[in-house]
Length: 500
Image 1 (cartoon, rainbow, N blue to C red):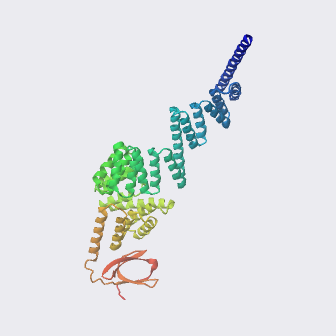
Image 2: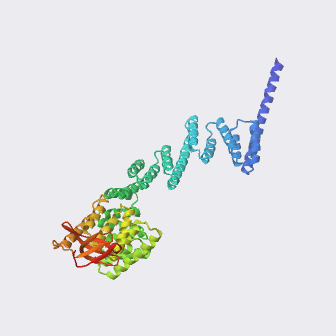
């Protein structure tokens, strides 16, 4: 019995020595693998790590090192297997989770990564490092969703864009920027009610997110709700008081409300922060013009021209100032410049309603009414909600003595804006006064000129204007009088001073 016990003790000692020797050998191979990896000898590293594992497969760092070596060799699936083995041996091994998360996110498997890490956090009993890794991965996923959504929107794949954005909100519902982007998409698509809701969500998450306030202001501005726009823009200034774009927008909102003193103040401030902004300078010049500060307006318009000679409508504006100052020759030169610039633009873009309006305005100022009417009618046909075009049309009609038509055009312009605009009402009063004066004393109106058209129709009245392209005939309809324009191509003959 004594000999048996002694033999057993010897056997245990031998087994212990062998075990210790194996661990030392496994550690030796691990160290060799680590040194090879650091020397970027990845094939050698794989060989040594595998030898270490063959001796002792239960060491976490060896599997992790082998996974790294496989990854450097481009053997991604083998690397994933080793990282998973490391995690199986130690459920709190954060490096393994980080490596797996890195591979999965590079593959675009963000949702799967977050699910894996969430499970790991449960297993690891709420490990903070894993929780931080979930936050980091979620932020990468969110960024990818946002960028892909924006790319899709720009490519006009709206369905995909909105879908990705809503998924981004699911990933991180308390991220204000995502709600802002959604609001911006709705804004571009002119879905203003939905945009307002999305922007409201962004502000509830972060009440200092000034981009959301600015975009709300822009929406209300487009809707001609200028007081609401002003309210939102002022909130931006509480956060960013030097925001020159918002200062300019405030100026334009007040200008639309015909509060020119406030408008001038904000635009001067905007220009002080951005003196090279040509749009701010043009807007300030226009306010000076509306306020009757003609010298200041002319000076600013000239600065705009120095910065960009073909700035839209600036020559019309300067021409109007010269006209008010009874500098007729200088005014006509500016209108001709505007016509030349517009003609060049129309060669490139013949259907631009804004350019068509500008050229129509210039033609009307030099009394080329047929060309003015042709261009303004095309502008309105292309953009029926363009208020400025109806104002130009009313101006043309008033000049031609078509007072009733001018009033209709002014009413149309007035109806396109929710906010009351006094200048339109004043212009309507002016047209009505002109109408009253025009027909005063004509109760016994007697037509003396007769125009025969090629289609068989006959008009009788008094020829008021006569040129190569057309004539303007004052006629009586019922108990009132008006004017019609008849084009030479449609006229067969004219008999003047004789009734039939």
